[in-house]
Amino acid sequence: MTYCLAFRLNEGLIFLGDTRTNAGVDNVSTFRKVHVLQPAPDRLFVLQSAGSLATTHEVLDRIETDLQAGDDRESLATVEHLYEAALYVGRLGREIAGEHAEALGADATATFILGGQIQGGRPDVLLVYPEGNYIRASDERPFLQIGESKYGKFMLELAVQAHVELEAAAKIALTSMLMTARANLSVGPPYDLAVYRNGSLELDEVRIEEDSPFLDELDAVWTRHLFEAIADLPAAPPHVTRD
Image (cartoon, rainbow, N blue to C red; front, side, top):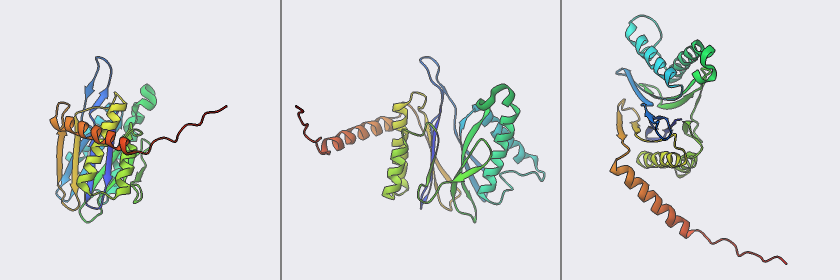
């Protein structure tokens, strides 16, 4: 399983993904799911993935092959708009999944979040479906999730309601990941966090390892404040004894 999320805020974009692909008592594998691509100086893309790891790897290989071809074929270096990049990634994913559908069926599909900026265009994040089409994050709900999304969704909605800035949103994104990992063994560290500031065409990246002191501190502070908040809640109404 996977959990990846992306924010589109007034200041920039946030991307966060776990790395766990298999979970069990003695079977845990990790692979990067936040992939950074800068095929030209005027553009930067972040591609997050969920679903078939093999399809994801083949999509990345096809992207690299198209970039190195040097001919007139479409690539992330030639598209003029972010939505064209999303359609390009979607077409690759659909074609590759189709090639393996006879053997794997729906298990061959992958879902992607594509974000970033092409100079002159608006920074954005788009969710690319296995069918090849896409949706954008909306102004009312400027975040996207793929994979195990239900446990951490509340925190992201809270960030939207509070109109938080980039730094605070990164903290909320990490808390969303923490809640998801606690609820589902198939999501876990290391975590890859990337922050993009509008117009910079540069990305700040950090990997947070399982034994990171920061992760321990985040967990401890979040738990402490959660119990303090519970203590401040009004008491339940008095019960009524029925005859």
